[in-house]
Image: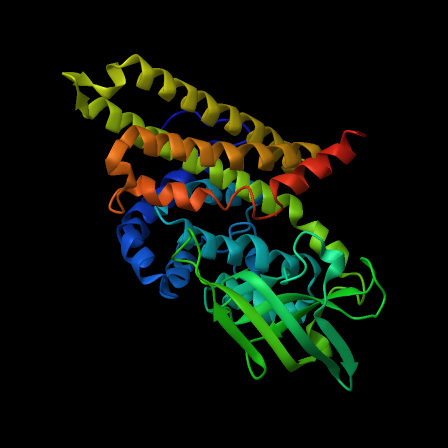
Length: 381
């Protein structure tokens, strides 16, 4: 085992080897079938839970492993080895997007009711913020929660929701006042049930994940399912953005390294004009450029991660890492496909799927354009 790269330690590298072995043994062999079926079975969550991988950063009192964000970062990188961006997305949405707000802002009763079974893989979560008319512009949310006796009556629609078909509960952003802007946004934990319906969406990539439009029609939500303070939900939205974007950067870093290793191996083995592809200067230089890109993205991401785990508010560094890695990952996958030639365009080769899956990166979790706007403000431009 090679020496750990800061901020990781030997302990984290031991976790990496364990998680990698599990993923390559239990998940990767099924990736193509899950992609074809456009679904992965819910038992995957139970298997991950049995390995302690659904609660790495959560306290032991909630069934977690008592670790921290660095332990979770290891899993974010290693999930690329599933070979299915959709499966990784479904797992990641549960672990990194849906459950953190409950952990950070939930009451003890909410944690026992939702976080504990989520860590056990018994109840799957989704985060519902995006709407047909409101993506990055969260101030334009239109899903309404009207106060009624004992709780709220919710009407509206969310879209592009990962785990939107299978989720047992949706951590949902709603408007609880008629005021415009960011004020009056609240979060409700909405159970799947009467009045909640999902419509699965077809996508360019991430085929194994269930992405859906979710409709709420006169859904009663009890008052005890209010997550965090009333009318202060915008703070909850912002609180997890840094980790969500870091998780995406880490996932891209892991995917880039794996794709480069596989493509370099292919170039060494595949012969053209009497010698390996890697012996041709054009291919060799391209592989060097790709290795440099993967390494540069890892350095930027690890720097942002180090700052994050030491308690900084590294908005600039995290935003730069997200912006840089997502586009670089897509371009690297496209270059790897090119090196594979005609084979790379065929479905039976991993790189065809990887190229499609990588295209979501510059859009999800805040688009490239939004990242540049954030950086413009941070840099006082």
